[in-house]
Every structure is written in structure tokens, then in C-alpha cells.
Length: 177
Image (cartoon, rainbow, N blue to C red; front, top):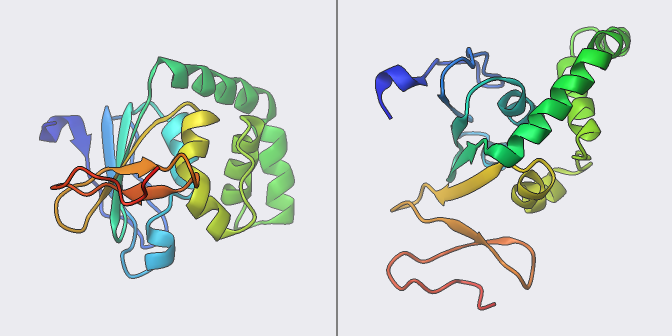
């Protein structure tokens, strides 16, 4: 990656309004909000699918995640575009009446629901399942790394369906599945 292929823009602690016209984008979540810093928001997911960048990198408090669009993801992108073309104006008007200053997040969650991603009601449910949901439902290539020490991928655990960190030196999993 070179400077001309990635765009960085310092943003608000609660939102990132950066142009999504580069091949790769990067943003960080506020690390002082540790509970929410290590999970993607509806805006993160929606913007990744809606805009033309092919890779996005997000730094949380203890994790760094990389998403890539693949040929499989392009079907999801097309579905989102088709739904938005047919419904965006109607839905935004409806949501503006209900949430005059805060319609963006409900709109993005509604659009993602049309793609099959039913946003969990609790943060804990989202935190436990977001990686597999993005992979399986939206067909996004997801890689997650620990920011503590060397970069170590997080691997899905077949037995518990959660994510555990792989130890770098020993190459053995923390969860013995």
C-alpha cells in the first residue's frame, strides 16, 4: 500500500465522514470507548458495501480488522444498490419524520436487514457473532488481528462458535477444538 492508494482523515470520536473513493480506506474507533471500539458499527458495514473502496482497515482498542470485497461480495453490493434505488427516498423521508436528527443509523440498519443481516438487539450478541455474520450473510472477507504485541489472527472456534486468539510462537490455539 502506498500513500496514494489509501486515504486517512481525522474524524469525530463518534463518526467518520471520509470520502470512500480510494481503493483502501482506514479509520480508527475511539480507544477510550473500549466496549464499542472493538466492534464495527452499522455505518462501518453499510459504508463498506455502499462505497467503491475494495478494502477497509479499522483499528479498535485491542483489535484491528481488515475487510475485503471479493467477487462473492459484489452480489451483496448489487442487492444493496438495487434496494437503495427502489427504497431510499421513501425510507429516508419516513425515518426523518420519526428521528429528525438521527435517521442515518436506522436507515443503515434497515438497508442491511434487506441484505439478510438482522442487526442484533444487544451489543453482546453483535460482539459475539459479527465476524461470522459478515462472512456468511454479506460475503465480506474478514480478517481480525490483535493489537496487543505482534499481529495475531483471531480464528473461529468450531466448538463454541466464538473467536479465540491464536498464539504466535507456539502455533497452538487457545481453544482446543
